[in-house]
Length: 190
Length: 190
DNA sequence: GCAGGTTTGCTAGCAGTGCTAGGATAAAGA
DNA sequence: TCTTTATCCTAGCACTGCTAGCAAACCTGC
Image (cartoon, rainbow over all chains, first blue to last red):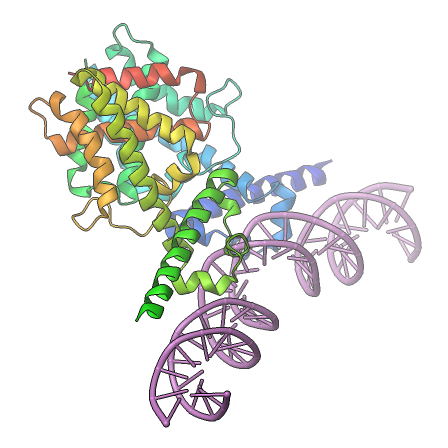
């Protein structure tokens, strides 16, 4: 009984090790460096072990995405609750979102640009995902006026996402980032 | 003299064939289907021929991107010039942009999401690129007010881009697309 | 018309990818 | 102690982008 319990526990630990290692490797060297061989070497197991935990590389990335969403949700929440009023809360959340995308680009890409097999805008979405989006919604809520809250939040989110992705692969000049961010927020502040 | 001219011409034609075939293949089966072997078979030449025209696969994609930008610029221009007033022109350009991204998703991805080796937000950017962005700028111009035109256009563009990319890989519910688009445009119409 | 040199495009192969079948090895239960 | 079961690794498949080196076709000067 206890032996089996230990094995289950060790298995769970190894699964976390895989996900954590994949995230760290992606953040330090980019997703191109995260090959199944490299990842296996990093956790000091052979390749097929990965496939006894996950269906494939995409499933590993999906697990990383969930971890990342939890992190982002926490950062957005901190930014929002520290702000003194709704206007500044929206600005703070927008800035926190941008900072997250800048600081952890590989993680951000996995979360929102790579095609990953996870339910997003549905009730079946993982809690961490809904939590992150919920933080954005809370920030938009006081300023929504007559507009539909959900849709408005999605639109604001899209603006942030567009800013970050277009800048990150050279489509926008980096110098004007702050100005663009301010412009976007001003357009959603009333 | 004339013989060499013919050879140069034939070479140029083949180069166009490569780019066109790559674009068509991507549009019909996605970029994953555009392997160098497949592309070579499609143009009925061997693989190394591709490398006598382009430095690598990325360079082929870059050429497709330029083609795509020219197409998009034309469609945006048509939408803008057909509109009766600035407000509706912005809405028309936004809708045309969204329609382009919806209709030719693979091409759109190559243009704005894939990391492709092309100068974008610089004076050295290919004319077609600047032209497409210029159409957006023209649409934003009458409604810019005191805001910096270039930066405001970039921000509006980011909004459109975010909407399309997040929707296209399942992060946003498709049903609410029109509402989101209308919301975005309303926020940039005054 | 014919040798010489150049251009052109092919076959074959390299190092890498995600993923999997099969057998060896270790641990568990009788 | 012996058998069964779970665990994990080695080796390999089919694919990727890319390239070295050779064969054939071509143009040129005689």
